[in-house]
Image (tube, rainbow, N blue to C red; front, side):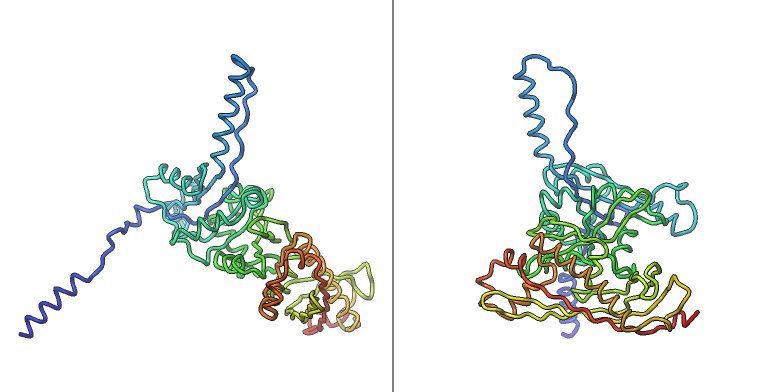
Length: 404
């Protein structure tokens, strides 16, 4: 009897096992590591003379415009070449200096149709499970918006929420097609530049999941890192302000640095200030720690905000023939505080100019005053919101140079 029950159990267990019915072998897949989205460039008009009647020429022009209107988007996919990558990692071969990746592009009336066009160029199935970077071109971000791209990414279950998002100043495809200065793919290089591992506070860190959270919240507008095609390399630093799903403006690298402080996501950075002893000399200080606290005050039907920034710094380099022991600590602290406050005020002015609450002040008001929040037109209210900034910086770790 036990053998019978055991046999029935084994048969039942076998039938409940799942298999990889839709699986693919590795050599049957093309792994996409980065995606670039751009607004399609209009086709160049022919300069040839008119043939036939003027009406026929007008009809041809209208037909061209109709076709061009349908072909709105250009999608570019970066795909590593397995043989090149293997040669590079193994230290041999590598194909004589050839690129270790391939960039394929297509223009279509939707992103999905663009992917289908690229798929027709390959003998392997496109796989998006290894996408780590998504870039949006400047024109597309301004005219169409980020939401179309994000919706495309969110609907593809293979794309992870930790995938980095960035806005390219110019065309994203041009950035994606550049050769990195170190032997790796462009996507891996840019990913390192806009990740915490870069150690730079002049960039803004964001990904698909963070963007989705901020975009869904009424009280905060998202920000995305900026990338740009330089003369010889890829440039980063600065950020794109997103308002109502579209690119509303840019933050400079220094404004992005103080935005990290205002969002309590700051990383260590260097500041250059004029020397208190000799104005023609400069002092490099390292701001090792900085954070902010928001004080919201309700004044009748309006609100006022006070932002208190605190932090500590150390002296790292002095251009003059003197050391930290010769400096007045209180004067130096005031100069550093003034520098940070100047950048913070510039960042707030730029955000209010485009009515984008990139600091999350609306989120705080909504949590503390939910009834009043329902009555607010926050776009108008934020643009004229009085914001006061105070900065308190402490001098510490003065061991770089003790004297003359």
